[in-house]
Length: 256
Ligand SMILES: NC(=O)c1ccc[n+]([C@@H]2O[C@H](COP(=O)([O-])OP(=O)(O)OC[C@H]3O[C@@H](n4cnc5c(N)ncnc54)[C@H](O)[C@@H]3O)[C@@H](O)[C@H]2O)c1
Image 1 (cartoon, rainbow, N blue to C red):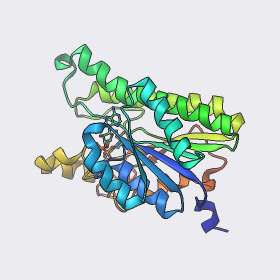
Image 2: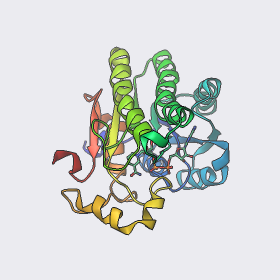
Image 3: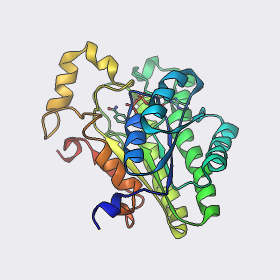
């Protein structure tokens, strides 16, 4: 009974932003371990790293740039054409821009918003249409951040703005898709180290230590140990009555 709640046998899961080294890779391998047939996608520039994830998760490989409307639609339809159905979509695609507000150009700001926010909405829109058409419900899991509803001391105005937007995209899609049995939630990770996005923190051990000590558990998030459980919760029947929620996976950071 308990393991059945997390069993994804017979389901098809798509993970966007799944190149090796990141949380998307961990999502793909966790979903495969839970029994799902997995499809992974990332930008063409990460083809080799995506192949590494695909090998670990026995997944099919798909290229996508989430800022490209036609490509996102083609991705969702391509996965359904390949695997026959779609049940779970995890959107882990994202970029970070660490820059003071007065040094950030409009182009840079809009690029971050385009990937993190518009891309999230677009993946949700295309997945939502496909899941509604299929008529068997489904799960969409987005990635925001511990800073979803606050900001941190490091200047990242475009990132903070885009990830706050992810929260209300999640709630909005949850509201519109709920009657179709599709749940939409987001995970809000604290600092998970190392991933491609956080690897640069290694050059600043003081800041890395501060991030760890800032949590109630007194440590950073471990991508291998701390991410799969919450992800599987939101991707599986275990969360059948959860939707529109922000689930913090941050060692207690946001509770202080
Ligand atoms: N690692 C952390 O501490 C942390 C904390 C909070 C939130 N997050 C969020 O989790 C998600 C995964 O982050 P990560 O740490 O694994 O970083 P990561 O850089 O390893 O993963 C992000 C992935 O998105 C892909 N991507 C970037 N632009 C894309 C585009 N236009 N189209 C498709 N794919 C694109 C990248 O190639 C990469 O594989 C991100 O949304 C990030 O904001 C991470």
